[in-house]
Every structure is written in C-alpha cells, then in structure tokens.
Length: 310
Image (tube, rainbow, N blue to C red; front, top):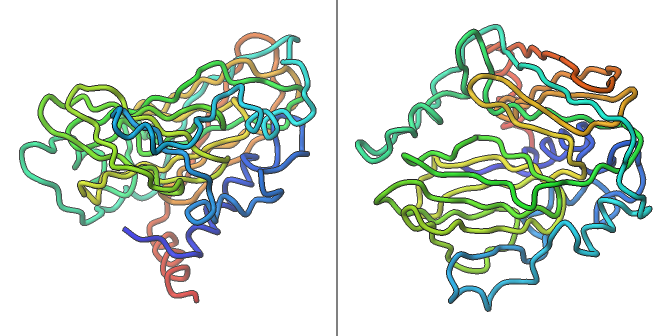
C-alpha cells in the first residue's frame, strides 16, 4: 500500500507533536541530524545505510552499526552531554480505550491456512480488545527535566501466522530493531522502509532475528518483501526513552520518569488521532488513562480530503 508525500508529511508532523524530533525530556535543542523535523518525512530518500542482517554473507554489505553509545547517537540524544538523571522518578501506568464507531473492514485478503493471525491483526482498520481496549497505541512522556537514557539495547518484534506482534513499534534512537520469526515452516523477508535497502534479509523459521539499525529519529515502515502486502508495522524511532505501545489489553507502563510536570500523549497511527494531557509525575506509581474517539464519517471525509489534495 503506497503512501503519498502528504501522508509522510502528516506523519512527520505527528512525530514532532509527540516530541520525537525536537525534544528529549526538557531539552528542546539539538534537533534531528538535519537540524529540523524534515528527516521524518524524507527518511525514505536521505537516511544513511542502516540494515543489519542475520546472514553472515550479507554482513559485508552493512554500514557501521549504530548503538546507544555511538557518538552520532549521543550527539542527537544528549547533545549537552549531561549525566543521566539520578533524582526521584515515577512510573506511569494506565489504559488506552476507544469509543465511537467500530473499526471498518480493511478489505484485505489473506492466504488460507498458513496465515492464521493475519486477519485478526490486519482485517480491520485498528484492533480493539475487550471493554474497548485499544491495541497498537503509542504512549509517550516528554517535557521533563533531565536526560533519561535508554536501558534496553534492542526493541524486539516477532512474526507469527503472517502477522507482526504489533502494528506499532516504538524504539529509542540508537536501539537496534530485532525481527524474529516464530513460525515453524514459513519464511519472511522483513525490510525497514525509510532506511536504504542493502541486502535481502531472510527471517528463517524459528531462526536468528534479523537486525535493523535506523539511521536517524523519525518514521519508518516495517514490511515483508515476500511480499505479503498486508504484513506491516509503523515504526517510530524517538529521541527519548519514555514511551510504550499498548497490546490488546490497552495497558501501558513507562518507567524512570523524572518527577514534575510532563506532557503525555496517546496516538493511534492507524487513524492519525492523538490525545494529550499535562500531568504531575510523583515519585512511585502514577496512573493515567486515555480515551480516543473514532467517528467513521469524519475519518472517511478526512481521508478523502488528503487523498485528493495535490
């Protein structure tokens, strides 16, 4: 499924709204590598080579791999070279729900038999669990004081039954993306669109994970090159570590947030809708729920306007 330039610009604006490009915690300096939000929209054309591979034969084709300690990553994530925040922190937990119209059918078709989870994952515009729980919602916390480093080296995604484990992936710039195939027989060719395609990467059945290294913060698209056009996940590479993505239970948990006033947001990429709240983080446990509203008629009108615009 192709995206127009307007689609990419719209997604870039959403990433900026959530602080992915212009802000890490309370820091509003040091932007993206290009000095603006533009890379989120132009990543498909200008990003540096970044694809890793599980196959040794492809290793010679890889660019140098980024990590959380790479100088180029630290220049973006922590340009003032501040020490990691060591003061009191809080954990934010909550649930994201959605009200209004049910998600419409996507009209996609799926192979019979071997793709048992594809229809449940991609058959409707978005996924809703019990009691209106919203899956695949990106929850972020920004505008705090202090530098909070990412603690996990990798963000992990699995494939099973022709479906990614989530339709939305959030990771911190400098993390690697690991895509593992849990199927016993089916193979896949995952590709991170938005980063240059360097080699054919095969995720073998129950084999080693395929690794990707996004070259800069922004918006990417994880797809399968076999191809299975329905198999996709939207990937947000953020300039801060305080984020999470909901599963079918709608739950999220974000740890190590410096105490004080912060800006929180919940975004459902499938419908480009978000809810923002400013709250006070206290030491220990904090609770916050989000509720989005889906109006099918308004969504169709908005989508039609964007599709028809030059």
